[in-house]
Each structure stands twice: as C-alpha cells, then as structure tokens.
Image 1 (cartoon, helix red, strand yellow):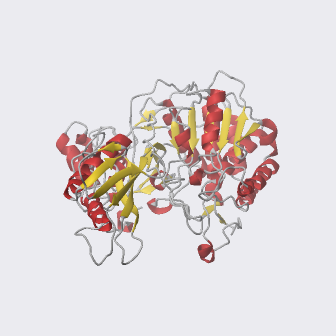
Image 2: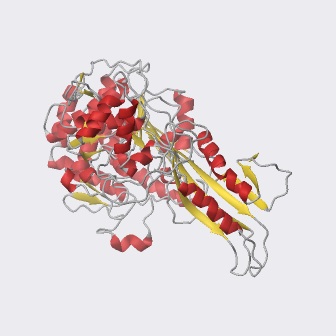
Image 3: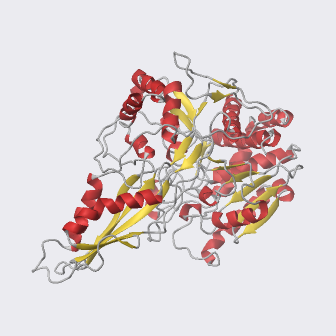
Length: 614
C-alpha cells in the first residue's frame, strides 16, 4: 500500500504499559496520530535446534551502512520430498482441483456450527450440531480417515494422528477449530449471499467460517488427502487437534484436547505447533508500506478483567449525600482514563523487533525512523526518538503495552432511590513484557488516594488496602471478573538460530513463490508478530453475544512445545487487519487464496518431515 493511499484517522489515545514494573508511574499518554500500520515482532535467545538443510540467512534489504536489522531466510522448497511437492504443485494449479477445493470448503460452511455463551455441558443437545460436520469430514476425506487414527475427545473434539515411520521424532501439531461465531439475525439481510450457503460466485466462496476457521481445518485436511492420494508416507508423525468451542473460550474443546495430548505425548512432546492467526496484525500477509510482509504470531498478550465496585448507604434521593455510589464510581473511572499505563519501547521486545524489520525492509518508512532504529540498539536517545515516532500510530502503541478499556458499567435501581452500589469492569490486555501481578498492583495504587478521599474501606483482590477496623462511609472493592485472567503467552524463539521459526519462514516464502510461479526470497518478507489476546472468549452473558476476551486455543497448549506459531496463510488486502468479513457480515474467501492455503499446509508438512528438528 503506497503512502498516497494511507488515510490518517483521528481516534482517542489508547493506553500502554511500562514493562514488568509491579507499580508503574502514572502519566498521561500524548494524543497523536500516524499514517502507517505496523505489525509487532519478537526476538529472544537462540534455540539449540538445527535444520538438516542449512537455511541461507541473508540481508534482503540491508540499510545503507550494511547493518542487517531483520535477516531473512531463503525460500525453503522440499528436497527429499521434492517429487511429491512438484507433482502436487501441478495438481493444485488445475481448474479441476480448484473446483474440488471449493466443494470441500463449501460443504463445511453449509453446516452451521455456531457457538454461543452459556451453552452448557457437552451433554446438552445443542452441541449435537457438530455431528453432521463430523459425518461430512468422514465422507469428504476418505483416505485421511482410513490412514489417520481418530480419537474423539470430550465428545466433539477431534484428535487425528498420522503416524510416521520414525517414532523418535517429535510430531508436528496442526490446530484448527470447528466452531464459528454466530450470525445475528438482524444482520442476515446485509449478507450478499446467505451466511451458511457456501455460495461460490466464480471467484469467492461466501459464508460464516469460510475464513475463520473452516478454511484452516479444511485446508489441513485437503492437503493431507492430496498427499495421501499421491502416495506420501510421513517419516515424522503429524497430529491434528480440532476444538469445537474456540470462539467461546475453548474450555470444553482445546482444554480437553490438551489434557489428552499431554497424557499421550508428554510435556514438550511436539517439535512445533501451528494454529490460526486471523486476529488483527497476525492475519497472514499483506502489503505494508511498499513491501509484502507475512506475520506469524509468536506471542499473545494476556488479559485481565477488573471489577470496581462501590457501596454506600441508600436512602431517598431528596436527601442526597455529597457523593453517591455512582458519583464516586464515576470519579474512579475518570482516574483510570486520566492515567493510562506508561508505554516505552523495550529492546528485544516483540514490537521493537518488528519495528526493526519494518525500518529495514519497508521502503515507505520514513528515513528518520530508519535512522533512529539503526542507532536504537546502542543509543537510548535514538530509542526514545524512534518510540516517539512509532507511537504516533495508536494501534502500534497499544500493542507495545498493557491497555485499559472501561467496557461495562451498572448502578442504581430507581430514579428516587440513592444507589447502594455501582460497579464497572475494566478490560486490560497485558503486554508480553508484563504480568497479571503488575497490572493488579498498578490498579490498586491508582485508586488508593480516591478511596481515602471518599472514606471508603478499600479491599483489592482479597487483600485489605485500608485499615479494615477504621470507620468508613462505604466500600471500594477491586476483584477479577469472568475468571482470574490469563498471563501473556510464552514467547516463541524467533532468532536466526531458532530452527522452527526459520523453517516456517522459508515455508511461507516457498508457498508464496510457488503459488505465483516466481522464485527468490525478496518477494515476501517474514516478520514475527504478536496477537493481542482477542480470538475466542467469554465476556457477555447475553445469549447471542460473541464478545472475545481470550487467546487462541493455543493458550491450552503451552506445555506441549516451546515453538507455538499463530498464522493463517491468507492475504489481507491493502494492509488491512482481517481477511474479508471475519466476525462480521459477508465473510468470504477467494478460491485462489484457499488453494494457496492448501499449498502452505502441504509445504509445511513436507518441510518439517524432512528436517532434522528433534
């Protein structure tokens, strides 16, 4: 996307975090706007893994002085499995295969598998909607179901094991979920084609789940069915884990699958894991400031919902006190918004590493930012200057640190009755550099002075902050809401010696090039990315709600491997944040994009199979 096509949008400043400080200095964030959309990145210590075929790491676009801030690998085309790779590339390019791919995906989309909050235990009849999908998968992928071992976990979770010939090698784990977000009845007329029609207009297939995430599940199965048809027998075991309630937290699906896999494969039992990555800046690949960039997610922000509850004596509203419960709560909420978390760019953090990649490889980035990032590694002044320029983009600034959003509020029962209580909930997305404890500590400190001003007995997360025996006018209680929160995900290694990340990068490049019949390694750049912890979750109790507040299903899989990637190989138009219609009306995927997804899973399985990853 060229600079001329970028539109500067004015919006309120979102807050960030000062990493890993138990209590942070309160400050006001500067309200500023910026033109570029950046993805975030990560760099950590080197892995001890090695790939059998050394990956050629080289500077695609070094800066003028030769410094390479974001080294790239060459495309990784299967060699040992080269014959089957070349054969399938010819197959995938045919019109016959495109028609077959559309039939596979369209049939799955036509089976509604919406999940809602409060659906109850899996013994409830409402969950039986997944049975027709299971029957469809069995009928549509006969070779897969005759060659892979299937275990149904907690009734509707699907665990497939494609046994390899070398049991000493750790398996590859591929994850995708069966459920989709609901389609609100009030929006059905806004769809160009009915949401569960699986309608193909000659270019795109329409319907809920066509992108998120049936394209992932059907893409994996289509690739494996095609490899089986061509006689492929894996050396390394491949496992498919498919949950059924990712959009409403994964507590029944992925949680149960994780327990099953831990029992069968043990902790750190997989060589690497790939799950969806549709949310925001890890949606796949897109053109950003003149360069096509793919962004595998190697981390996810944590989350914490804090309930602020104020109580005070009731009475008739004709005799009001100076401050009612609602009035005091309002002051407390203003205190939040006046004092966002302090944000700083930290060397080695996800956002810092991505800024390095963008500065080096995106030609549309300003020369001043390039210069700042070049010197930032060893100069604090340059780091602060880069930070100041980068934070003109509020989306980027929000991804750097912990955010706060007042999302729910309630209080009062009657117009002539003083409210005896009022409450609100603040949603935090916790920086990968921070923690739940640090977020709680900052919130406690933030409200302490107002609690004293209002003479409120102050309790926070079970601890008495004020003197519990002292007389008070009312109470202020901080507590967690909708669960205890979730820490930021462990960060996946992504340095030059992190073989799984380098293998994935080379696979992305090989897929991108093969699909376009090009070669080389500068057509697409790969930069580590971060998810903000917003795919799948439970927040609202409304029966048709699908508000997201948790991470991907991978949050249950942290013990299975140190190498977790969240990536869906879909192109996003014009540097956007999501593929077409995800979580809204008119969800659709082009047949060309879906075939590229199948190519990607094929390349990944073949490359991991012939690698010397443990």
